[in-house]
Image: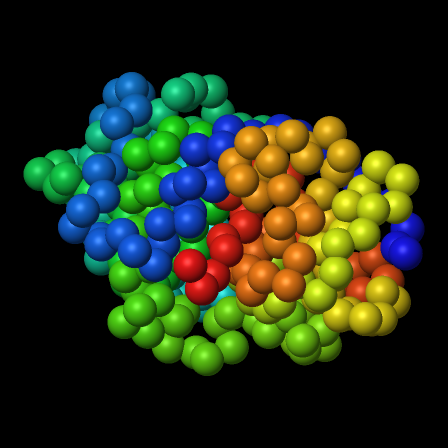
Length: 261
């Protein structure tokens, strides 16, 4: 039905379980990220909505969140209010800098039980990412985002924060951005090595989510087999691309949340 898309990689089913609790889990009930300590320092400058510089010169990039539709100035101001000038500890699995020299980490302000990431999500200043395999981290981020969404704070005050799968034009306007999209899966079709979750009838125009064949076992292991999603209302998140119509490639089971349970 649709031409094949690109590569994918498997993920842990725990991510899906974590994001599926968005609607049912309270912010205060979620245990935050219990990862290994990777250093500490004092924040002396906020670079942008997701990164800051420490007194010793290290630049830190907040792991586990995406900017989404947040205004850059708003996100930067929120991060400054939470962490600016504060003593912080860094936690993570690896302190190796990325290609830009930034250390990715979960960050805790001294005396706080919740990560800076969770605080930003709770204020509606970020979106929960999907690349966190540690289940407590994923659950904490999901719960914080859910609390902000329920209260319509920040990003969620805009009724278009979640894109309607039936409005492909609005989705195409977000190409290259991490976006949340909601709608009913009308059909599930496989073409070559790619499975398509089709949200419309016209493959050259309507929105679809794609799953590579080699990732299907991870989805099935998380009770998210593609065929089980047919005629279900779901929420997907990821970076929007355009291949015919707008697309999101599902690389991890945490990108899907089944609604209406």
